[in-house]
Image 1 (tube, rainbow, N blue to C red):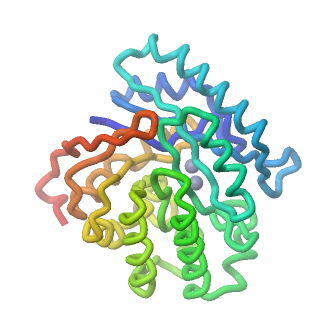
Image 2 (image 1 turned 90 degrees about the horizontal axis):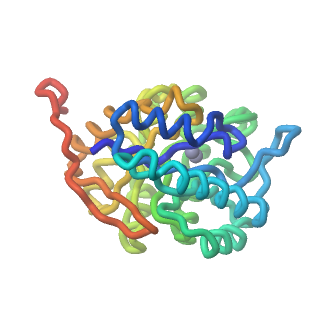
Length: 283
Ligand SMILES: [Zn+2]
Ligand SMILES: [Zn+2]
């Protein structure tokens, strides 16, 4: 099965392309299931920070839903899902909960992109990284990620170690080892709350050159017995739709995962991860 459960289009402020262009791309590449996971928050027209408005967000997902309903019969071989990528900020939780209650989503990804008011994955990231050493920059991010898991208003944790995207640039290759106990504690909490993990393959084509999370954290997740795992390319334009997906699938197998999770109306079903590992790829 070919699955891409993290896809943006023009409905995200930082995305491009129509729903139909993305669907056509997925069809051409032989995908079986895709999930549009646009951001609930919008970038202000002047740039700068993102803002969240319940009415505006609801309208956005309703428009996305209508397009999926129009296109689904045209592409019967491809299952098209409505998802959302929700950004965890403590002050947004109430609005996010209200949004989730009022839209029939198939899948909700929970993500951290902002730590203590600073962007960590795009925009003016220097303000965050330049003033902190690696231990503080990564440690504080993982603290917030754990806080997001405490909230638990979503199905899977998106790009678990996204902070390494620019951290790599400031501190060199990311090593998860110093944060292992923090990471294991978050993974255990996820298991307790029934929250799954996403393998986000955009990192393969970004400076870390590996998925979010990397193999070490994936192995910890397998050991913690995380039962729900999705995969997504986090593409923001149709031309990057497929980025890193095969690398991500191989990483899952290497880490010991044999199944991947499908979603429908936020109900899960695990299916075998049926990828043939080349002999020399086994790690
Ligand atoms: Zn994200
Ligand atoms: Zn995304």
